[in-house]
Image (cartoon, rainbow, N blue to C red; front, side):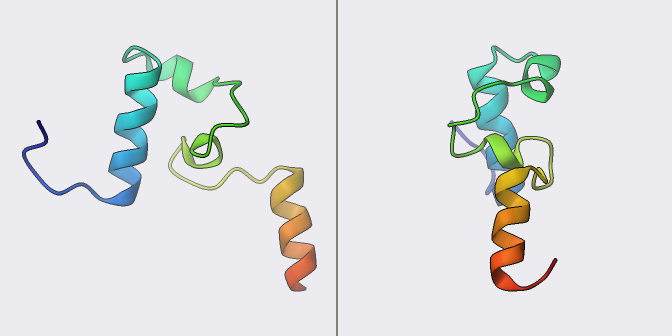
Amino acid sequence: MISKRLTKQEAIKKKCLECSAGNKNEVANCEIKDCALWRYRNGYEEQDELYFKHMKKKGKK
């Protein structure tokens, strides 16, 4: 049971740790790229090819 309200990032971190049996190294090295949380698992948005494609489409890079 959750005892306090979690921020979005705290909830993502908690779920990723749960998925990786509490192993922080597994979270950092996660290879499940089709997971909806994968791109945010390290506390920031991963800047991979999908990120750059999106930014280019928006005219930001």
